[in-house]
Image (cartoon, rainbow, N blue to C red; front, side):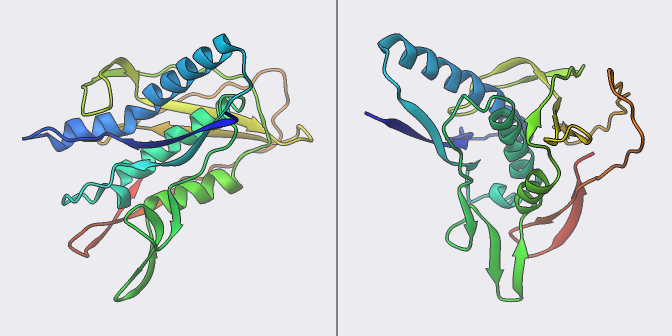
Amino acid sequence: MDGISIHYYSPQHLPIGYSDTDVFKASVFSPISVKERITEAQKLISKIGYDIKIAVTEYNAMYFHSLRHRTRSMEAAIQVAGLLNVFLSYPGMTDHNDYSCLAQFWDGSCIRFGTKGLYTTPTYDILNLYSNKRGEMKIMSQLNSPTVQSLQIGNTPAITNAKILDGLVTRNKRGNKIYISLLNRSETDSYSIPISIKNCKVSNYGGFTQWLQTIFLMKTHGWSRIR
């Protein structure tokens, strides 16, 4: 065996009488449990002494047929951002990682074609952001975050003291540009975060806030933001 291919669609399956708020939390905090599962799989592989690669060949929010149409919502975008933080923070954990589907094929695709033309989901903006607004090398960082309790929903376990805020800090190869990516998993609260940069001189800085279009099943449009 040369490799293991894994698909992550969280959470599944939904219990009868589920709460959308509980499912949202389970969805956006699921990257925490994904990291733990992949780490445990790597430990088992190392015990048998074979060079077996792990690849996450599909990942997205679970594609339930609900009013929230989760793969096209902010919920999916926040989950995907958390997964990208995991994959980029621990590059040796997996051999490669592939988003579920780029263009129109099924509900998980982030470029959609409808009766009124082409539109993109919030996750498309996240993939674009992580492709163009990060450096090639990860650097050490520390982030203090408030925590919440996330309940078990389907295949996503309960998480105690789940961090609401997540971060990734990278730099370019020349070492003259730093990218600080901050993710807020809360659906209701905003946070102010002081940033301290040590052992380097900051000559200029700028911010980039991603505004995301949310597409609902009933064909209405609204705007949301990762704050």
